[in-house]
Image 1 (spheres, rainbow, N blue to C red):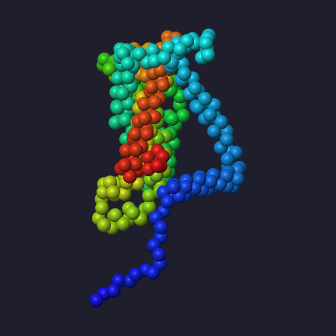
Image 2 (image 1 turned 135 degrees about the horizontal axis):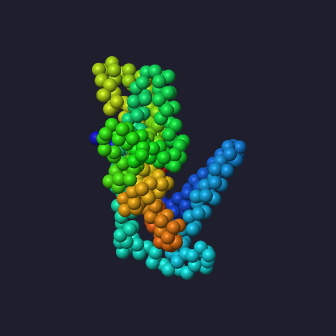
Length: 338
């Protein structure tokens, strides 16, 4: 017959709930003090590096965070000669263009969403494909030459880029002069409202594709070559290697850039579009940024423009946070860790 071992020691009394709460509070305070001590230690250890960071923090504070206080004019009938302190408060009246569905605002919103959708589909994948193409080149000399040529347009201002496209595709541009010289009918894409979205999409691809490949090439350079060798030994083709080795290595940076693109979805090229707005008309080219400019700076409706800009910023932040949560749910790091 099996005997059960009995512990001769007396049973411990039930813990006091109040004592448990005190212990947890003490543990939290201890963890907080340890974190503070760690931060102080890092600041003392990296003091020189911290000093180098201070100018950048000052720029962010002065030019990015302090101007946010100016959003208060979204709730005022703001007049520049009265200033923020003297302008009368109107509450949510300036948000009426959003609530009541102002036709000009709705047209600008629709154009913004269409341009964002088109550029996400046709612009975002181009640097990925271009980086994969460059990474497949065996000659380093050819790769560097192609990179140099494609990087250069990024450093051109939009004024120069728009002028280049006008001289090539405009009514008196190179292509139309060539067509007329051979008896063909000219095609002016610069002033055609129906071709405007395609035109600005082509401009973005030409200007920023080379520069956008830098991040993808940096990620591709970290992929272990032994993975390709092992997959090749297993009989994997180049397509299989691309699908099972290369793209998984790029997944993190692709998700990150997609989240940032989503947060920036209501912001499209302000300067690029404003430079070409007179050629195609505001009906086809008005977006939220140009709507804010035309109503605020040009039209003097500062409060309405600030209200639209404020809502646009809040929606952008909400999209980034939501997309980042989805990325965490799918196992990706996203923009920031939890």
